[in-house]
Image 1 (cartoon, rainbow, N blue to C red):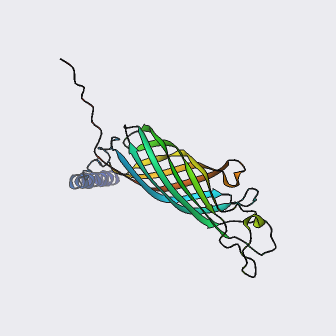
Image 2 (image 1 turned 30 degrees about the vertical axis):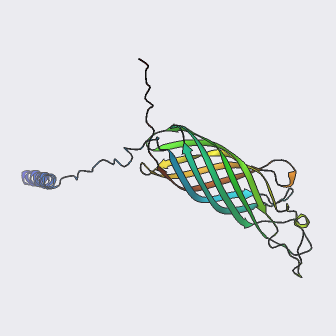
Length: 232
């Protein structure tokens, strides 16, 4: 019995010695703090954005099947204060659309939409990691609906015969904003959802959903306080 107890105590002591030695040999590496976002600020005069875009689009007034279009979204914003800017935006959407039942065997023709917009932008809650912006952009939209509208003999088919709008330039708007995830003081990953408004066909405002993701680059000398000159 004493021999067994002695063996157990010796084993425990041996394990303890190994643990103490292992701790003495291992030193936890020192991890330097990440200061990548420490210098993020919101006093740049310019922001340039470019990204991939998506839009759910109706190419006709009464189509049951809409079009899921992909394309681009590009924007330049000029800030006049750390919160207020004027933005100029251009975007294009491309893809195929469903059609109304027709005798021409036309299915899934190509359609496109381009928008050219300008308007105010406001920077909301922001910190070194994230910033929220809101915009109301207005301008025009051009819809192209007649590509691929031919019958079996390659004769052109009027767009209204398949439920489409005519090619036209009309009112366009994008109401929404963006969520900016800072990757560095200048480089930002942006997610931008919008409600796009158009008036194709003159039948009233049509609302669509649009989304884009891409990168923002900030540049330009920062804002400086204006010195007030006191009269003597």
